[in-house]
Image (tube, rainbow, N blue to C red):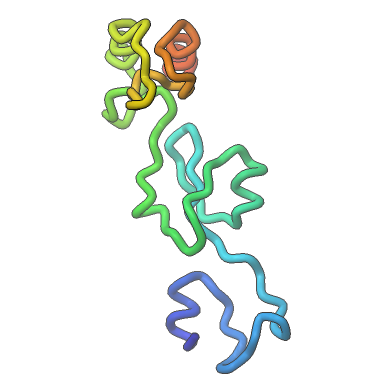
Amino acid sequence: VNETLCDDIGGIFQGLFTACSTSNCEPPNGACCFDSGECQSLQQIACVDGGGTYQGDFTGCAAAECPMAGDVNGSGAVTVDDILAVINAFGAVCVPTPCPEDVNDSGVVNIDDILAVINAFAA
């Protein structure tokens, strides 16, 4: 990898033709999505330990499009409309086709989903 490409992917250039076994290479960073919709560039272990969802090595936050937990309608904010959408879908079975109102991915829209959206709304 040349110096420019190394910099572009977040690496620290160690010189041409060097191998990681002799260069003490760090694990790569990638986009890490949090329930708030926030994205940070982190190593996978730091992302998972911090409660995030790792999007892959060398991924950038600009392309990650991190969803906000509880934002059922994809508006970018948790609002009363999201709460109403979950209430309207109450009892829906979301297997095998997932539905956005099943916030906790349990396979059915129930009280737990309503409470999760209310919790996100209050945050």
